[in-house]
Length: 341
Ligand code: UDP
Ligand code: MG
Image (cartoon, rainbow, N blue to C red; front, side):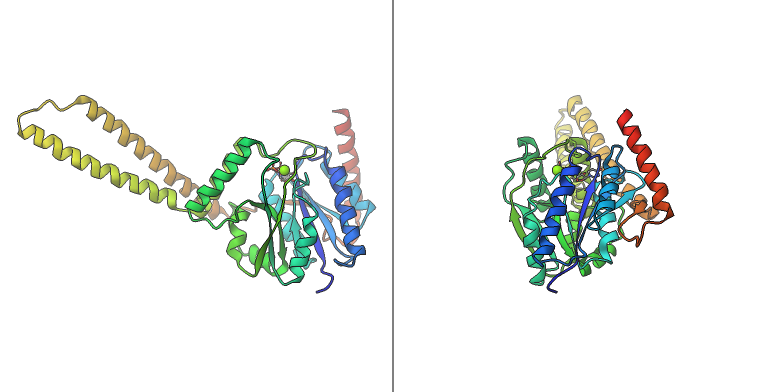
């Protein structure tokens, strides 16, 4: 495959500050790659609007009218980064030989895209973009992220160290990905489970050019927790082991207190009693809560709710139809609304 049909998939959530820049840069890159005959001239960029409340969709929509290389997919509401990305990957799947996912803020060096494509031509079906160092992150983000990777490794979750969601996936890999039906999606953990020939390319991550991170601490913790509980039962095992340890300890104490009693020293400490009640009570609550987490997961998975709902798909649409002209009006009203705000 000398000139693969490549689609760049870019999830966007309230990215109006940076999107015009991103659109230009990526469009130029695609044109350049086409000129160099590295990718097919049908290659496109698919921007997924993850239910933004600003002018994000309006930018995407207008760009899609100006050039055939830019397409948009609008989700009906905010589904979260992972689901938005997935929506883009699956929308792009049939019409592309391979798909590259990247963030709208272009923190990930886009020069790596060339390497991605070279590796794909060499026969790799999954190519991971791995950050060499994390200079551009705050100390806090770096420490928490690295702690997270270490923890995941300890828990036996197959993660690629320092790889986020910057990666290339071939069509077969995407087909395989589609067979993972879980609602709690942690792509970073799932992709390595797919297998196929894969490799990594290395790059330095830059700072966000404009706008703020869409991953505040709360979302980050939720993301990490989801990653752990979706992939590992080690926490449950850990609680069980702790429970066993406490049980054994209490047996030893029981023997001790009984010996004391038979030797005539009957004043058994109130302190030790009350402490152990609290300790064991706390432990039980913790265990129940944790088990509840997993039951909650089972509950969510058993519902098989759709992970995202597509409002408008400009990628797989042959020609603008009546629905688009109605949509154009909607975009214009949205524009007016954001301007008056
Ligand atoms: N994003 C999204 N939906 C969300 C949150 C984020 O589509 O609910 C997108 C966001 O627009 C960006 C990417 O996910 O393209 C990564 O987010 P961000 O750059 O804020 O994360 P960070 O780089 O700070 O981890
Ligand atoms: Mg970012």
